[in-house]
Amino acid sequence: MKEDNRLLQRLKRYGSVGVSAGKMATTFAGQRLTSDSFVTEKAAQELRKALGGLKGPIMKVAQIMATIPDALPEEFAKELSQLQSDAPPMGWPFVKRRMTKELGANWQARFDTFERESSYAASLGQVHHATDHAGNRLVCKLQYPDMSSAIEADLKQLKFIFSIYRRYDKAIDPSNILEELTERLREELDYRREAKNMQLYAEILRDEPMIHVPVPDTDLSSDRLLSMSYLEGQPLIKMAEDNPDLRNTIAIAMFKGWYLPLYHYGVIHGDPHLGNYTVRPDGSLNLLDFGCIRFFEASFVGGIIDLYKAIRDGDHDLAVHAYETWGFENLSREVIEVLNRWARYIYTPLLEDKVRRIHDSDDGLYGAKVANEIHQELKKLGGIRPPREFVMVDRAAVGLGSVFMRTKAEVNWHRLFHDLVDGFDADALNLKQKDLLTKVGLT
Image (cartoon, rainbow, N blue to C red; front, side):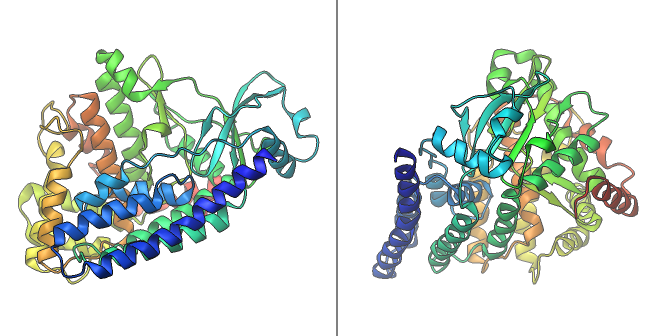
């Protein structure tokens, strides 16, 4: 059958990664004594070749890794950022079998309409539009078969690939990064958890009229099927380009959508991918995907604010306290100075009480030059091992910064930030987070 052939091809592509990884190891072994730049460039090309053409969790992890500053050298990030998901969506026979397994043999009778063709194919599943019997438009996210096994296999291969890279570049130990992404990916497979995440964000943002969250339909959802209300909107970049007067409105909504949950509840959306939100005609934001949500202790959130104050005031001891609060260990004064360079780059827009762009440069890759310079300095100093908790916050900052830069938004970032953090109370945050998690049934 056609669908069986597609699934077989998908599985064959997964298996090919192991073969390609082995070839990488052989290539590197033969080039151990060549220059670092040659090895890195060769490694990046081999890595892209090993992962190219895949559609699944390993693609998602590779693309996430490419967006985390310093997790990879510039050559690796550049190659991985070019990976594209090109496998076709699964067709109607697959959809019928999968929907029958999730909702029962009479599943079609539970919808008024259900579109046979998918509207979007993602790394872990595909999306179909539908309507319920009340005439409400729905979006149904249906997971591909056996994704749990695929994730475990892919992560094992990716761990092997990066262990090869680590032999030649000691600047960043990615072990904690991979552990963090592994846990987040496993959570993304649980669509009932994502429905609760959706309810959590709806509660957090209930008083923010410029941010909209879908409503999950729990009666039409399961562990591997998530049905939710449809939110009308346009791609963010297109809206910003076509409506320059909305750029600042969009940026403010995004800033609040990501950072109000973090500073008030210790929660962050860890995937600021352009496909995870759309914009309405008034510039308000639709948040669409809630699979990658991270919770933090109040002490970690307090560390973010402490580092801001340390950079603002030139307070070395407070910066050390912030890094140690996050989980960095055995940091020399030289390493701290290098980390502070990255922190100054991230925090600079927040330090100036004026309307400004998020970044002075029009360079399309936000922070790439600074990140590469820092990577080289860390390599000379023996490298660091970023803590797990650091990964998603840093990624969100860079991802959002890239969007703010592309939209050319000009706002007072300083005041937006202070509106959220002034009067920060760690005990109050912990209590609010606990009450919120209990309310939506998350642990």
